[in-house]
Image (cartoon, rainbow, N blue to C red; front, side, top):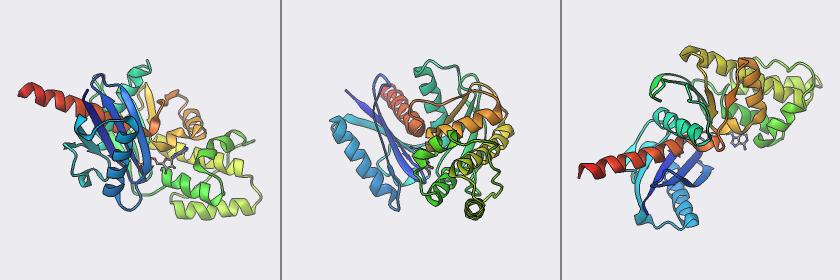
Length: 271
Ligand code: ADP
């Protein structure tokens, strides 16, 4: 059996997906990017192969993507995360029996993107915000840290909020932190602050999506898509249903793994 890997070296997390010749997702790994992207990515891949009992020589093609993709010298190919995201999102939606995706919202650790696809799955347009942390995972990390809760708890707090969500206006994570300190000082609850943060991110994301056009079906991925509170805020602000895949954080690495398989097949047919 031959295996194919997609390695997404993101600003915050390294994501690896391994598939077999039938495009079946066999395993995935998510670990912190830290300060040594290449070293940690190599270690994470070795660990995943070990967990799956796959010998290194049977991993026949690897595609890297994400911020740190150029550092992964063992990769047979390096592709942009926009392309990998589009391929992975489409495949994940199909595998889960969902409608064809036309719009992807991706929120990562340091940036957020809106990608528009045509009916064949080609990327026709995209918009990106990487100038400030507002509307990214980093913003949520800063908020969670200040409120002394985990990012994985934000969703629960969101749904316990009562009343109108508070308005968080700062467009920078540092100023948002001082705004939150002010809200805490005025005796606002953590629940209401969390919901306010989610709605402020949702409004920013929707502005980004409007730049490429809102076409259904809409798909949301990246680590923050694990936050059901944020999903709820985006759906409410958009007044449209959005689809979250089973493993939202690994879609881009899954897309890179599919591309690895396709490149391998193409090259094999050339010989
Ligand atoms: P990148 O590709 O830029 O490294 P990711 O798509 O991996 O980014 O997303 C990282 C972000 O995902 C983190 O900053 C964090 O805010 C968020 N995140 C990670 N795990 C969870 C979780 N279990 N619940 C909610 N948010 C999460």
